Image (cartoon, rainbow, N blue to C red):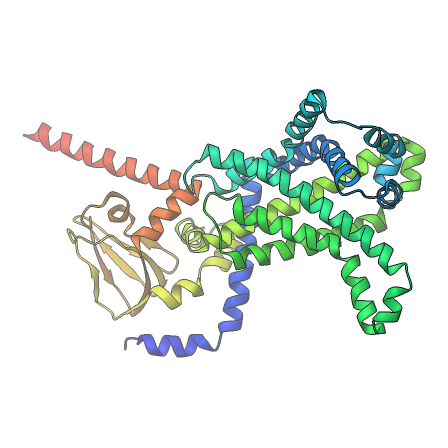
Length: 440
């Protein structure tokens, strides 16, 4: 007895929460796997180094804007910087502030110096752009002018956000330190205002991450996906910062390493933050092209009898892609023909359940659950090279050829395997032609 599509959808709807959880787990697994494959830990190190190279030029620009244009009090700026710890122990901030305040006029030399500082600070954003190119690889067209403009705009945006954040914190502390809020606000509103002021820097970080995730990719993700990735990254960074500060004893490190301890700790902290930033950027890319990555996992699914535990775990996780089941499942009765030799169709097929026979001139191949077939016509655009028949009551996934072509672009392993398969197919046909010509 065969199946009906309605029967499958009814039985499947009861498992929707489980399917969503499985889909999220699959995204995480693919993200981690591609994160390692792209060697993003190394790029995180390069990003942390670029951040340190850009940090002081950015700080200098922020100080100039705060003191010269915003007219912030040097005492307030110094108090805020000292509360961060690193700046007060790594540099003579009072001397830097005095030097900035001593500039009375802006001439050609000052403009040239400012441009040089601005150019040095762009290293961090160039590093971000490079990481995004690694993650998105061949997706989207290369636009050098746009990418350079994004780097420059990102630097300007970061300076503006830091200035706004600093001004907000300074003004908020001044207002909250007076008696005015207590006389105008209720205790509840006062508590909310203080918490908003307390978490304002996190809001600035969230906004910056959202703009980076949304603007820098060559293929723009959905805004809602960028919001979720930015929120997850911001919260993860804050959790790491809290754990890190509770575990690292700066007093002991200062005794051993002196002022260098602050640089070492800051570099490690920035490295962790940058690794999280890249992880969620990779997660965003995987979510954006999740169907393509899922096709790749099906195409590269490990065999049933593989002794590798990791491969067995991967097979269990991806062998039943519920997302594709709802979209592409086709129930078949025993003996039903899926496609015939010479037929002009190009879909890729995956055996969800049952058994499918691939009938060629001189042999029959039996494919069970987890097998993929029909890729030659999908890749080469030629007629079917064999006949596929359901040997038992089965369910197959009929995957559109466009999705498989996108998978070849997204996943390098799939591209290599398909290229090898096509080469073997062409070589085999060429040898058969030569054999026929020899017989003639």
